[in-house]
Length: 143
Image 1: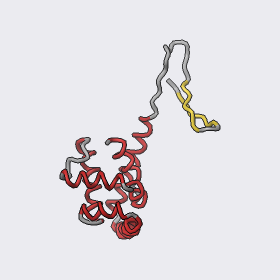
Image 2: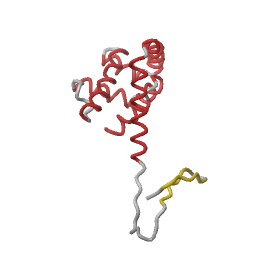
Image 3: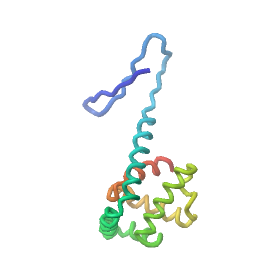
Image 4: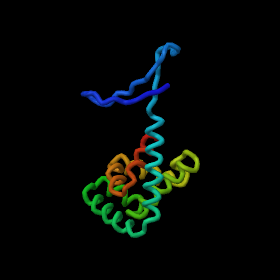
């Protein structure tokens, strides 16, 4: 069934084009597009993050600056063992999700708890600073 989106005063509306053979109510779920786009963005962001050594130093500098601004996030980063260990835990969570749909597969329960608390205290900002905000969105939606 074809659909399209229209901009209206208050936002974006999905329009479903039906014909006489359709029984009502009609349900349209745009989440497949979101999951597909966000997953592709996450993979691209992770690839850029993991394979760009020169960018890693710059991202670590951004992470350090961001941590100074948030005492709560810093507490959880410290609990995880520092910025590098936090990035490793984020990578392990993404790797576990890709491998088995379980983001905790490669994390101890303590690290999983600390990473969850870190997420609640500003992981979206860190993800954006690192260029992997789409991965954060996926993890939050999956939890």
